[in-house]
Length: 270
Image (tube, rainbow, N blue to C red):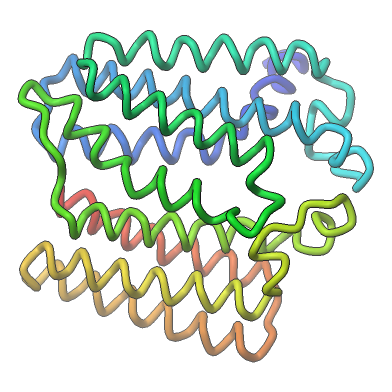
C-alpha cells in the first residue's frame, strides 16, 4: 500500500471504525434485516466512522503536534489538514446519503448520532459532558438498526440501557492511555478531572452493569449466565487493579476484553 494511502487510512482511526461497523452489521444480521439493508447500513456506518476519525485528527492536529503524537498522520504533516477536513465532510454526507433508502426514521436518528460524534470531537470532549456523546451514540446504535428494518420499531429498553453503559465504559477507557498528554494540551474532560482510578472504576462498573442488563434481556439462559459470569470476573479483576493503581494500558486492555464479552451478549439480545 502506498505511503500516502496508508497515511489517510491511519487518520481515519481504522480500528474503532471497523469495530463499530462490524457490531452494526452483526446487529443487523441478528435482527433479521434484509440482506440489502444490512449491507447498506454497514456501508453507511463505515462512512460515518471514517468521517468521525478524520474529523478527530483534523480538529486535534495542533494539540497532537504539541504533545508529539507521532502516530497521528495529520499532526505529522503526512495528511494536509484541509484534505482531512474536506474528506471528513464528504464521508459524513455519504453516510447520510446511504441511509436515505433505509427510511426517514433511520436517517433522522443517524443524522443526530453523527452530529453528536462530531460535537464530541469539536467541543464536548474537553468538558464535564464528555461521556454524553458516547452514552447517546452507543445506547441508540441498536435503535438505528431496528429503525432501518422493513417495519421500523424501537429496541428493548434493556438493550438501549446496555448500549449506553457500554458507551460509558468506552469513554472512560478511551481517556486512560492519554490522560497526561491530553491535560497538557487542554483536553480536560470528565475522565481527566476524575483521574485514572476513578475513570477505570467507572468503566468496569459500567461493563458489569451492561452484562447484567443483557443477561436480563436474554432471560438468564445458559449463554447469558456465562456472559454475565465472564463480564463480572473481568470487571472485578479490573476494579482491583484500578484501585491498586496498575498501569493504564493494562486497564485499557481489560476494558476492551469486557466490552467484547458484552458486545457478544448485545448481538445475542438483538
